[in-house]
Image (cartoon, rainbow, N blue to C red; front, side, top):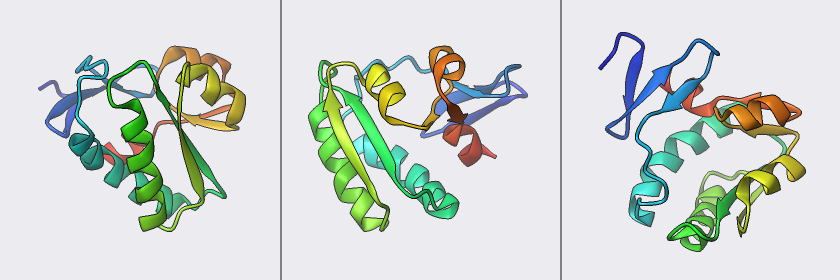
Length: 126
């Protein structure tokens, strides 16, 4: 692990010079729905603290378990008493940019195109 690295769910995330934490695992949809809960719980806990009026999650349908991730997220949103939705869509990045005022990402496309960006992974890693 590097001086600037932290482990989240046993995967290295690195604090980069653009001020965002970047995931280095490159899993590309290989995770199973059970593992997603481990990642969603700290995100939803942080969102509870931030008290947004609504949150919207988007998952790619072409990624394995995209629909299951959306279903699981909807259930967890209710558990955390957060107003929100979760969708499985063909292009999650395009959907997020069209439907969100503030996007949670460390992806350069989002950072450059979104109205606002928050690095929830970074917030949690702090």
